[in-house]
Length: 259
Image 1 (cartoon, rainbow, N blue to C red):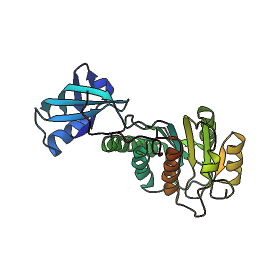
Image 2 (cartoon, helix red, strand yellow):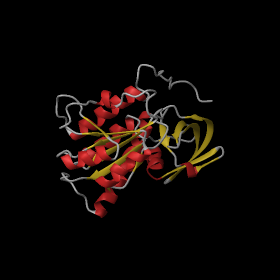
Image 3 (spheres, helix red, strand yellow):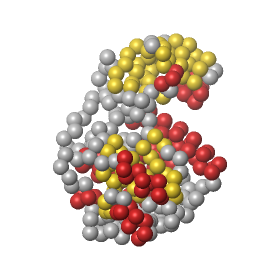
Image 4 (spheres, rainbow, N blue to C red):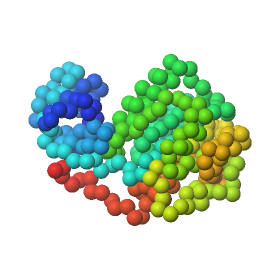
């Protein structure tokens, strides 16, 4: 079954309305017809089945036939703050981290950032990132749409530590503590903030500022990774240790019928 994103505001009782890109994809690309069954994801934790009732050039009306909580939401709230990267690396990261179940993504500029987008360019990139996050939501059938913050400064990222049970800054110059050691605590955290620097990494001053704010500063092993590789690796390890990718988690049967 094909799944589509529906804004929660376009759901009303047993009816849903798809507009814009989703409606055009149904009509012009997939060439679906009234009577075809589809799935819907609202990005707010719910998954639906439905039947197409009517198709217009920019609008598709759907009769909702079933509903259940979406199974793809991470059991742990993961936030990833990523130093701004060059070219299209950030675009790829949005999709990859959404697949990994990241709840919130915070792009930021720090001392060694090479890419520093102007305000208008940053807003355009944010709109593009949201479209990528929607595509990732449909592809992996996650329960919630990844929140994408406006481009921030490093000071704001440091302040986010207060909102998380565990905050880790990854620094290639930290060789004495690795992620598994930095996260060793009884019960595990309900929320984690992972901070990865730009291509040039962090300065010693930034690492000290993070430590002073309560961050653990850790490395990712003996090899220096690209920033975009480090982000995915850190998220995967955190999900394995405390989230829904560990050996204690049950595999959900996504082929089971909706209620």
